[in-house]
Image (cartoon, rainbow, N blue to C red; front, side, top):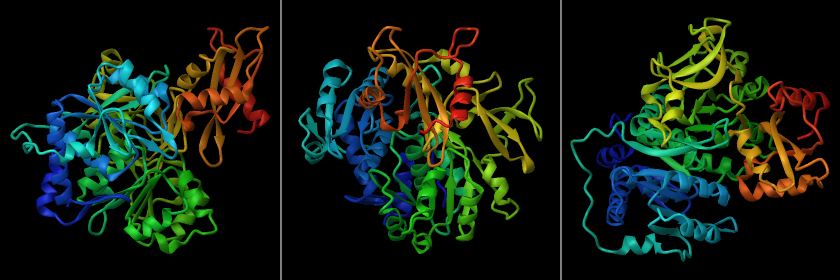
Length: 526
């Protein structure tokens, strides 16, 4: 049963009638059937309406992956509000940038997570951003304004979704993704893109009855908001949420919740299969094991194949609302082929590879991966020039990723036109890290490169020049602490090297190719 509705909200309302008793969202603290989910989302849509939220308004939510927050996203979708999630790993600088750029009218928040009290940062946000009219605590002892539990207890007029309007290309969420300039851009994702991705996942990776998926991705990540949530909802299935990935309990959750599809970076599966405690029987319900963010080694894929699981690479990005490629489950794909490729287009004709001369790449040719626009983002929020530059004249999104067309038409990733790299499934943008380092009073210049890593695929190595030739140089420990205070931990380089000079190009820019070649030759540990 694949939903043909036009939005997540319409999907939930439809399933509340056709599968009312099926579990929709579940986490450690709450479980919603589709009937429950529809009722709670409508009740919270009324709260949003009474707080003054209207169609097109932005609403920020600081949350971990949890059923209650996903329900709030459905409520926002009913109102037509635009979801903007703040990752709990973010530091004040990252919170501030997102709020200043998106200008949300309300901030929902968790008061604490894993020992971190968010109140000091949030107080500063509320003081410095007059756009925030309300702060609403989702759970815990919040003291910044309202509490959602109090609002939910108040009597109010029922909410009814507006009927007769095409919601396909209404914005559902803004997901921030950095560019080579280091300034994050908000990709405005429409209902249509999220729903179409969910339909493609269910067509190409079907479950015997309905999908049961596990979401530990942050809800500011297209993996959590689009891939996992869309797969579960659009297939009329169950999504189980956990606040973070816990390798100690992962297998137990898969077994107990009878999860049918797993998705993650190769390092996740490497970690699981290398554990002495790994028990294949925990994964008996799994129909599909999907991986993205990096190539999977042939040895690791063979181990998975020996367990009898079907598996598929997939390639995707935020601006495309999620995953774009898959591999055929017809038995003709060798492990060797899948270890070095990322599959074919989920939707025929949607993904193309274009050479430098503007022609479609044939077998053995390199070109940029481009994506047909209809299922992509609407725009970069408030960035018309960046939006225009992102699309070709005939309506394809330019990914900046370069691939080679190999056997069976599969795509093999080669390089990136930008400097972005992936570490543990996360997109890392060197310029963002360099900008943070260059704000340090002892730093004059920073250059961040990516190096291979056995577990994370790639990790960052930061080269730093002191503020002046005579200045006291910063220590690596100082630089690491500086970064950790200002950005999520996954962005912090694994090593810092303080130099007196760096190689440059004729333009005066740092020669990162030479830096990387030097680091690889010297086998700098990271």
